[in-house]
Image (cartoon, rainbow, N blue to C red; front, side, top):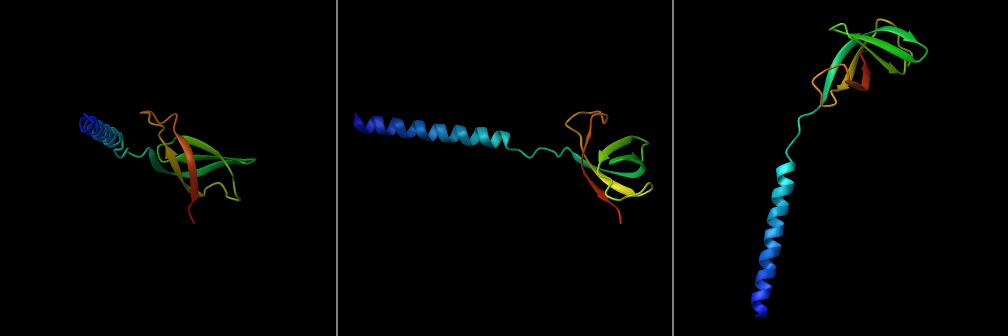
Length: 98
């Protein structure tokens, strides 16, 4: 009877581990990135607010003029925030062209 309980206990532990590995594996797939690059040109700098226009004509703003001038080209790293529209996308980083 004691060996039977040990075997049942081991089987339950093995089943729990198999389920755990399946559960973790099922949800650990690589999610597509929500980040994309968006080149743009600085069209306005007011105080520390920079307004840029991308190649589609959309205007985006961010803080941090960092001594740049109107006409400078930047690359905005955007986050789509997992939506199909771009109107709620966010700038997460900006790099300046040299």
